Image (cartoon, rainbow, N blue to C red):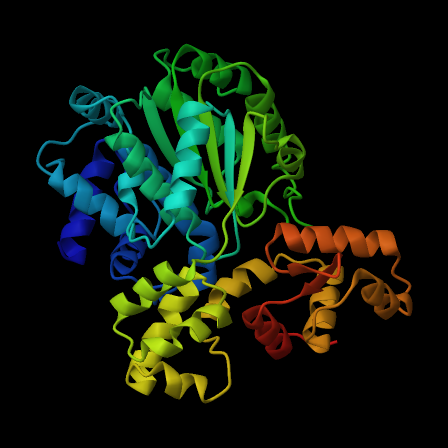
Length: 443
């Protein structure tokens, strides 16, 4: 299916819900999104890329998502439409409700939005998958969160988890709903979307109470992917954006109220109220996702076609097993060093390149104090004790309690490494973060 065929399909689907056709601007956004262009690269006469990204695209994706009954965005547009084409919806247009009923007749899971993911390739993660399945199926946790820095594979892990759950005959969910929070939807719009999908009552008020009633009546699995988009920038980890504070009540209610369902979250950072509720014997669990172990990471590099396997472990440690960073650097080594890892390592540098885009999204969220502490660690380069950090910041009139708060926030964001030496914690940055901070930040 080319871009014009994709656009034609969307226009037909759009016509089932709205009498007003897609505007030329909306059609062009769809066409160029299908072609894989980022908003900054879109060329649309009369409109800046910033205006398109901020004012037009979010509403367009919401409207299309409403028509299809699944969350659609620029990233998963191609996969969603390919799936629809396979379901032959292009010839027999169905409303979202009819589409879900048809899926329900096929198996017990009536809204498999997880199928819209474009990349489910996974290396290792067997232990993590087993833990998540145990928490959801055996322990019947009410809320499960997966945290980790960008590129660790939180979304990919979740997609593979759902594949395992679906193939497990013991799994009994009335509905699985995958919702991306990439465009920071309001709580009201999220509640409306979920309730419309799972409630037998029409025009039910989108409230937490009505959602909980449904979560009690049937067993549902609901995924909120990329939760970090509802958190504030320029502040400590886990602080909500203005107007999004009501999400806190949703998470508290789901975590503490009696019901038989599960809410699964993926995020770079986790709400503080969830961190407090997490516990081994609690029905709220947190899985901090670390980098790949050596063997799975080697398999990733092997699949990419690198040579000189004896040098791979150094490369893996340099990037702390971050799957996406390893894929990016492996591609660069193939293109510039003919796949020879030793040739790249001989340059004694850390390639940032496209990896910077991953870090940009995460570090742009930091407060001034967090940036100062990162710069301090990047300048020292060696692991340091808390007492040494206090000496460094004493001249800046920053109190010990402030330093503790900032350290905690950076650890929540997976940006600081801590190790124990002689019974005392030592804090440092992984090489990739250190290189990034040294390059893009100044005092």
